[in-house]
Amino acid sequence: MPAYEFRCKTCRHTFTLLYGSYAEYEQATPRCPRCDSTDLSRLIRRVAILTSEESRFERWTDPGRLAGLEEDDPRAVGRLMREMMTEMGEEMDPEIEEVVERLEAGEDPETIEESLSLDVDGGDTEE
Ligand SMILES: [Zn+2]
Image (cartoon, rainbow, N blue to C red; front, side):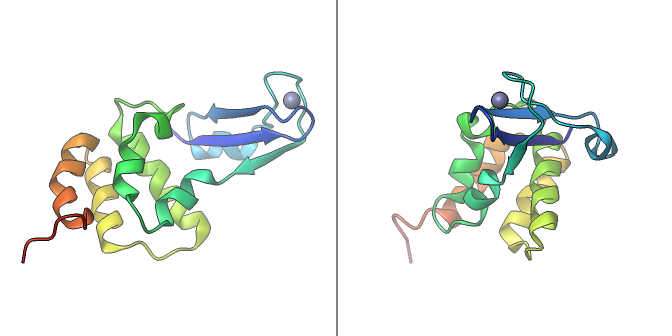
């Protein structure tokens, strides 16, 4: 289920809207739930998190970062990540690609994080 984060330019309220499908989003006119304004800017905060160098997966699997998504639906998270990468026109890191594929396969984000943390966490390297 696509989820989009917006900020209302009128009252500066920030909120997330969920759509049943991408086509539904294309046709919908998002409105501010607080003041009913349609003058909104779409936030791409999660993409910035995704492409930052540090702790990408930790941040991604932090439930707070995924607020507004259906957290028990890894497929939705995977789809959202893929959509955002596509929109940004970014090449996906092989690591991120793997995460997205595993999310889309319905794997638990925490399991994925655990299996990746050895590679991602550069804190204590064992050589
Ligand atoms: Zn508003």
